[in-house]
Image 1 (cartoon, rainbow, N blue to C red):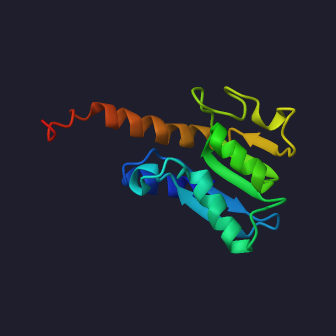
Image 2 (cartoon, helix red, strand yellow; image 1 turned 45 degrees about the vertical axis):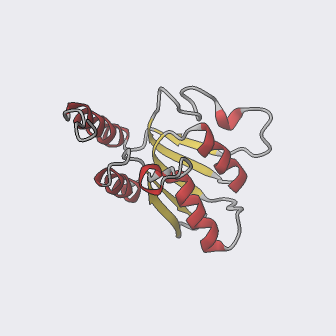
Length: 152
C-alpha cells in the first residue's frame, strides 16, 4: 500500500485525483504500479487500477493474472471491478471506501454479484485514514482555489 500511496501522491502532483494502485504476483513480485491519469492522458479509462493491470499483463505476457494481488488506495469503481474480474485478480486490498461510486462494498457488492464468472477476496480499510486523508486534503485544497478566470 505504501507504493500505491506514492503513486497516488504523484497523481495529485499532476492535478489528478490522488488514487494509486499496484499489482503483485501471488509470490509478491511487483508487476505494475500506477496513479490516476485520465486528465493527463485524455482517457476516461486511465484509472490507476486499469493502468496497473495493463502494466502487469504486459509484464507477464498474458491478460489473465490469476492469483495476483491488487492494492489500491480507494475502493474501485464498476469499470475497475470489471477489469479485475476479467484479469482474474485473486485478492483486492484497498484503503478508503468510496461512498459515491465504490463498486466493491459501498454502492455495489461487486465481487459477490451472482452473474460474474470469477470471484476474488477483499481486504478493506488498509491504511484507511492515510488514503482517505490524501483524498480529502486534495479535494479540500482544490475547492479552496479561486475559479479559473483565464477563460473569460
